[in-house]
Image 1 (cartoon, rainbow, N blue to C red):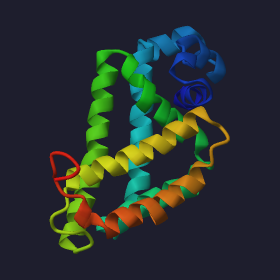
Image 2 (cartoon, rainbow, N blue to C red):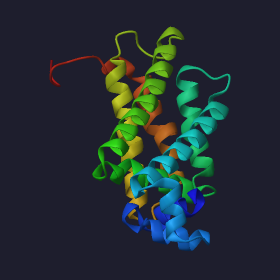
Image 3 (spheres, rainbow, N blue to C red):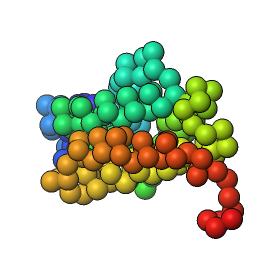
Length: 197
């Protein structure tokens, strides 16, 4: 049932997922899906949990024995390497990330919690980069973390709406051009109230 939900999410987003469609595609009745999960939101939470665990394992493997900026770059390049291999899973995950907030409170809380895990990983790696002297010591880590996440989410969002968008290429360019320049010039990313101070 989880695999069928991932497939439906990947193809049509959150609105394409109904208990009936999941049941039919999985070869079960709607009643069985309803008895097992109780509601669409509970099913989506189960799928999000599955995808979060999958992504956490991928993250651990791609960042094993890597610290600071090397960990961030390795993770993003790993996504670039297999974004098309695991297309359905990535698309399902990001459909939930982008549009799951329209659902009920329980799913919203789950999404917010999972986002905070991703953000804390990013902050941890940036703090390691400071210790390793890969970044300027006056850098605003939270600002840099926000820029990394928004750059990534912007590329992913474009990929979600434009099937012809070459996300693999753009993720590589994000690492080798954009982030490289940002990290090399991290002394410019210090806390200011407005640009021009």
